[in-house]
Amino acid sequence: MHKAAQPSQAPIDTPAVRRIRRALLAWYTRSARDLPWRRTRHPYPVWVAEIMLQQTRIDQGTPYFERFMEAFPTVEALASAPEDAVLKLWEGLGYYARARNLHRAARLVAHERGGQFPETADDWQTLPGIGRYTAGAIASIAFHEAVPVLDGNVKRVLSRLFDIATSIGQAATERRLWALAEALVPARRPGDFNQALMELGAIVCTPKSPSCTICPVRGVCKAFVRGTQAERPVRGKKPAAPHHELVVAAIEKNGRFLLGKRPPSGLLGGLWEFPGGQVEAGETHEQALKRVIRGELGVELRVGGLAAVVNHAYSHFKVTLNVYRCSIASGSPRPVTHTGLKWVPRAWFGRYAFPKANLKFLKAL
Ligand code: SF4
View 1: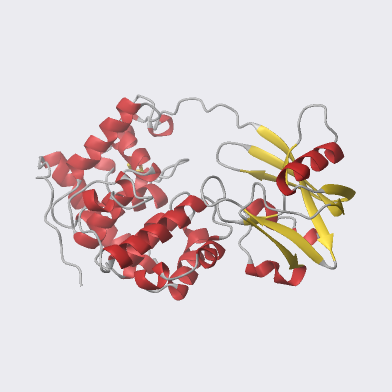
View 2 (view 1 turned 180 degrees about the horizontal axis):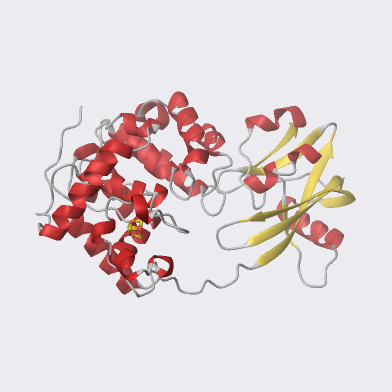
């Protein structure tokens, strides 16, 4: 059983800070949503939820969390699972490095720490995939350590509470926000306080049209007093996401399709996919497919009809996938850029973890 860690520093105690803490904690006690990972303080589900819910909406992430905890109810169960099984339960959530790091970290906890979880935010940060935010969330919720959290919701709330006029993309603003979050977190109920800040950002102090009239901290909110809520947080201009035109080969033989497993690290690492790649300037789709597949599988391709065209957006770029039915004209495929290849019947697709962009065209095959 884990025990509570001592607070790492003495939190600041001024009347305004005390007011914010009191109001937020009282509001959280009344209004917190009943979410599956909030029914426990055990570090394992808290950790899984913190990793899984990053970059993911709560309504979308909750069924994933429930399925994951059912399949791997303990850190030992997760540690002994094959990576493919972990990725399959993550399929569609994106940011697969999170799943791979969670799996690696579970193995470290189960095998090298004798099943003992880290107890402080500093120690949590020694595990793969755990940064300052995640470490602060787990240590404050599961071990009552008075350490701050700063995610997108908290940044927005603090930018408004303190009416911060500099861009949240700047390192100096980020440092200021961390310092404010650190000053606010109380020694008593730090985990509830951090969750209250995040919850306020999720359901009251929302990006568009914040519900200031029902906000528990409107009396101390500088943006509310000055009427600048809509201008906070200040964001720098984002460059437009580049777009890539891709060709994908649905190579079929005797009712089976050729799938490749992506290398373990990097974008979509460890997932299974249909081979393919980028169309270069001046190339037709057929030329691109033949070139790409020669490089990836070492075979000559016969390109058939177009099976599907799907668009997909990643965090920093967009792609259009042009999927063609293909067969092998000559040669035997071998993995060059993949770590493995398999001929898989359509009925077995459900056993493999695919990138979301691939899931979008499976039905067309
Ligand atoms: Fe956000 Fe409005 Fe509350 Fe200020 S008063 S924290 S802007 S919801």
